[in-house]
Length: 173
Image (cartoon, rainbow, N blue to C red; front, top):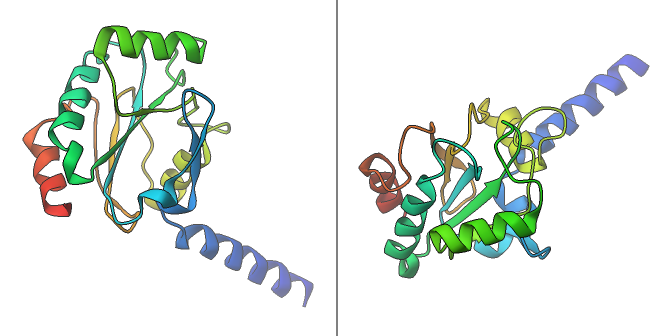
């Protein structure tokens, strides 16, 4: 009987994790403010793990272009600086300055988070557990629909404003 109780508990816990969507999470922005993703219900979200010292860092320009293009169309872009691949600055203040000075970023930039492994931010842990996807490198992109479900993901090689991504965004808006 005890084994059955344990198995049922594990089932209900894992079912609860699987039933979540992106809007069940929060994340802290680069200025230390908590962002409740539930505030963006009904809007698609492009989540991108970023790094300041990477060969793909110039994709900040593409993200800024995408942000300007979709500013009035309810697309939410969230950049999550990460040192999971050892290419991020060590302080949020430095990341913020780097992004503003070099790329004039106006989309949401979060605190520095882990995107894989035992210390992964709960959002990335959920993506891994629910969808079996983890960033393989910096500038991995995850697009969520207005219900908070993953639509598609793209590798670092796909630029954020490529037609592969914008076509998917256009279908969601």
